[in-house]
Amino acid sequence: MSELTTHPGGCHCGAVRFEVDLPPTFEVEDCNCSICAMSGNIHVIVPASRFRLLQGAETLTEYTFNTGGAKHRFCKICGIKSFYVPRSNQDGYAVTWRCLDDWQALDVTINKFDGQNWEANAGALAHKSKA
Image: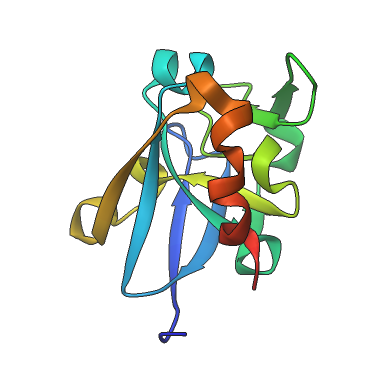
């Protein structure tokens, strides 16, 4: 694997801060499931070992729906979901790409993911949270 670099990020108001280790180039998922489409969420899935919540655990609230497998975590103050535990990768995190402080400078490939047909397509993401 390529050398990893630590990237800080957080929510809009700054109450939630985290860091994530990413390679120089990586893929982000542009999912069309109901919640991602409505919130415009484009995210990178990483193993849990590459994600660290630095502050704001007490300001997070959690939303689940359908099977309850995904743990959508939002800042109670500003409402931003800067990361969550995806149903497809419960051993990792999906970090909202645009919540990274340096998101515009990062070399990413945007993958369209058909989350509207989640059951048929989720297996394609399973490898992304493996170390």
